[in-house]
Image (cartoon, helix red, strand yellow):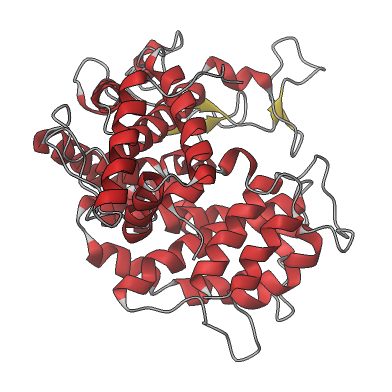
Length: 417
């Protein structure tokens, strides 16, 4: 829980000036040397045009958007106090002996109560082992959340403090030789006594960088983020995509038929586009119809996810990965939103199947051992409203407990159509 603060004095003055200028000049926000550009090129999942319109509405004094921005600024103020972290901070060396290699414990594996050393660990699907916190996943969470909220606060307030601290987080975690993470997940989701050298499924952990790449791009224009920094980050992701495409873990994960395979594909497309490699993104996008055919039934159900103990979550989770890809494919001239196999399999059919269960109109017939994350369902509906150009999906958000909830920041960067 973040402590509640108010907009800083500098940010309040800046927003007040923007509002005054909007009244005088037809809602055109003035630009100063310190202001980030209103329209940002190179965004992938975020909506550059929508963000520019949000800026105009903020300048005009929109009360709801100001409340959302306040939440974002509160979080950014918190992250100003958070010291940059690094994978090199962990007390345990990975099997490579290189502290720069990312390492994480698989989430659903627990010590064996029948052996003195707890090995081999045993799987308890859907139940998180708190030992995970001893490795690198909390650090990845910290840098990705920090950069997202700091970059948004910078873009919408123009306060350079936020860009400066975001840059420190990025350089410390990804760029500086002493502390950077190697661009691989060789030791992601290892299991003691079972898979000591990591598993292919660990690759799903880097979807935490899903919104970070656009957040990096939002720093352009800041005096604290140089073109050299931007190119260094593009190179890191270029190297990571190379690892995803050529490593043993990466090639194995690409063949996963469930949500793991979808999120693998989502990452390759997203990070390739950020790295400036649309050809690789296009190659993966061209394989998505076959993935949809294999994952969905004609009625929209997902047998590979329904066998899980958190099946409602995983069905939505898989849909979100595929909808991310559909969002990225459209500018490349590929329409996955309206793709449908000869027997009716497709994203729209899957959403039609899922909606009454997501909104609680029907009782989910499969296993779901914990409470659904309704704010993630809200994100799904926003993506669908935009992708299908169908406002009925947007209206469904109001049927969810809490609406967007802590995901309300999406109203700033992927606003409702």
